[in-house]
Image 1 (tube, one colour):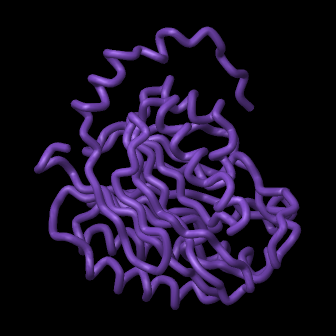
Image 2 (cartoon, rainbow, N blue to C red):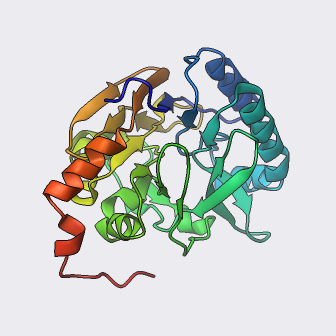
Length: 275
């Protein structure tokens, strides 16, 4: 890795029911980060609020601009880029987007990705049944944005299972793909690392997955294992459990060499129809 290349950090959190408490936890975490700049800080899915019901999350969505202003101020204060995991963004009076905002170090929101694939599944855990579509409006746009760290592609959690989205991000030039997540424990044990590694290898991108971990106030349990994976499928850093952070660098010279030596995208014979 390049010694002085930009730093990328993934924060592992155990978000609770109260958005203001979660914001205070974020402020404390930012005060512990390395001093290297430029820095991209990645937060997990549902970092702002991990509610018991969609009704509770909808109430927070109505105050989304207030929290976006706080995030903007934190970016300027700490001179960081921030991938704000997901936070609820109001769609209408009944639904919200699971919105992943990307802020630059000037506090500007330079991109927003709304989670496309919604988690409507049955899982063998305490919750049992998940129906995100009851309250979440699915997005329909693929997002890749330029940054000092490389071209960043945005995804969220359940998107990880849909390789077509990741391949489209690669075709649009992504070099780093972010996967903020709140994986369940059963699905995490079975599929988290294999899926992330496969997505990194097939797209020849760095994959940064900031995760929720632990038993939350809403009764859910999440898997943790925040991880940074290279375009060759190497685990560069992982945090299996607890609250904290991992850091690494995206070596674009290495990435470009991998792509020159094995030009997968130019060999691609299939083009998935998206959305």
